[in-house]
Length: 175
Length: 274
Image (cartoon, rainbow over the protein chains, first blue to last red):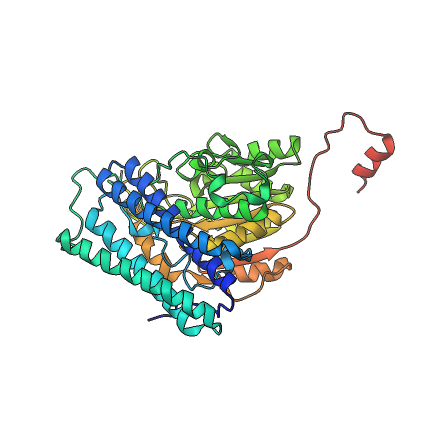
C-alpha cells in the first residue's frame, strides 16, 4: 500500500490541524455531492450523502472541541502532510455519476473511511511525539469503527456492485 | 466577519452547481475558493468574469462580484473592468472553446497587453454544453462526435505556446485531479503582477470518458519556473500536453490605462516617450 503520509507530524497542534481539515473537507465534499445528486434528480443517493456529511460535521465538531485549547498552525491547502490530492476522507468527484445508486455511494464512503483510518494509523506509527501517537491511534480506532459500520450497512443493502444500468436516454449521445 | 476569518466555504454563493457528477470543474471551484481564502481577499475586492459554456457558470457559484458575459468575450469584459477598477482582483474563467476559439483573438491581445488579470481556462477538450463537439484543443483524430466522424484532422491549439508568443508573463498548467496543487498555482497566478494564464485540465467525464486516464498520465514538470522566454519555449515545445506546474513567470511592466481626467503636458510627454 502506498503511504498516505508525506512527512512526520510532530506536535499535537499540527496533528489536530490536519484532523480538523480532514473532517471539515470530508463533510463539505459530501454536502456538495448531495447537492449535485439533488440537481440530477437522484434523491436516494443525495439523502445518503447528506447523512454522511452530517457524520463528518459531527466529527469535525468533536475535533474542534479537542483542539480548543491549542493554537492550531495555519497550514496552506497544499502543505498538508498527506499524499493525496485532498484530505484522505474526501470523496473524489470523478468517483460519482448521476446513475450511481445507494450501494455505489456506500462504496465511495467505505473507501474514504478506510483511507482516513489508514492515515491516522500511519501517523500513530510514525510520529516522534507520544502524545500525537496516542491521539492518532484513538482516531484510527474510531475510523475503524466507521469502516465496520459501513461494511455492515453494505451487507444490509445486499449490494452486489453490478455495473450501472444503461440509460436509454443518455445525456452524452454525441451529436 | 473579518477577512482573515473567511473560510473557503464562505466564498461559495450557495447556488448549487448544475455540472454533471464527476465533472472536473468542481475541483476548480474548490481550489479557487481556497485560494481566495488563503489570500484573504475581501469578497467585494474580487471581480469574476466569464464567457459561455459549462465552466463559464463558475461566477454564479462564487460569492463575489461576477459577470457571466458573452461567448468568447470574457477577456474583453475583464479588460474593461480592470481598466475602470484597477483596485479589483480581476479573475476570468472559461473553457477551451470560449477562450481559444470564439475568443481566440481576445486571448492573444490580453496576453500582449499584460494587464493584471488572471485567466483560468478549464480545458476539457470538448464543447460539453452543446453535447460534445470537438474544440480547438481536441486531438485531430477524436471521432466521437457525429460532426467530426473522422476527427477534425486539424492540429490542436497550443495555449501555452500561444500565450508565450503573445506576451503573457505567467504560464502554468494544473489538473483538477490534484486540487491542492491547483490551489497553490492559483495563489501564485493571482499574486503575479500581469497577465497570468492558468491552464486547468478539467475532465468532462460525460462526453470524454477517456479523460479518466489523465489521473495516471498527468505528471509534474521537473524544471523550476523560468523567466527566460527561450527556456520557456523549449519546455513548452517538449511538453506532452499533460505536464503540470508553473512553466514561466517573468516580471514585466503591467499595462494599466490611467483614468485621471486631466494631466500635465510633461506627464503626457513622459507617457508617450519611446
